[in-house]
Amino acid sequence: MRRWGPLFGAACLLIALGFGAAAWLRRPAEAPGFGSVAGEVTLPGGVNLGGPFTLVNQDGRTVTDRDYRGRWTLMTFGYTFCPDVCPTELATIASALDALDPALAERVQPVFVSIDPARDTPEHLKQYVALFHPRLVGLTGTPEQVAAAARAYRVYYAKARGQDTTEYLMDHSSFMYLIGPDGTVRALFQPGVTPEQLAEALRRRAAQS
Image (cartoon, rainbow, N blue to C red):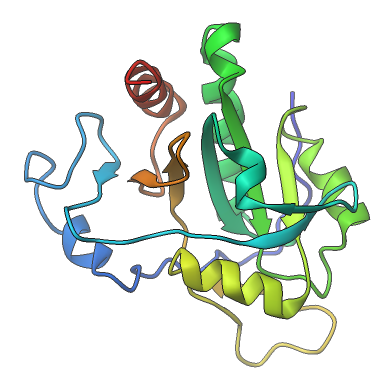
């Protein structure tokens, strides 16, 4: 059974992505833009999301988006001190991967990008991601590198107001990004998607390549 550390007593703030995902969340699931699985959002034509990034993995090695080309990447942004949203999402990803056929699961790389580089060092990330899944990769970097990656995926994050300098919570948007083997974002998954729904979507998407 995987563990994810103590709760801090407050939830991470979910906000809409800058390109209008909030409007999608208010639309019925059968409307254009939603995938065939509950909680899945397909990007409409003309919307650009994602892009190049340079970060550092949990082993201290510099990596770029090109290191993950050729396979599916399931990416989420958060931080290790997140009280419940981040560990819940990572547990969902881990359970979904475990539900897949092993050969298919090997074609999906789970990635957790920290938006709290001040505390989430590679060493700390290595201990954290190991709690969820042996194949989960943790990425961090300089504040500038993290900010650039967040901009590319239109991720909002900020230190919560009224927090001290060492013990603080971060407000951040919370979507899972499914990135195709060619490096383009193929779909988003809303918070609350179940492991079963996520596994179903991964099976269907992976069958396309």
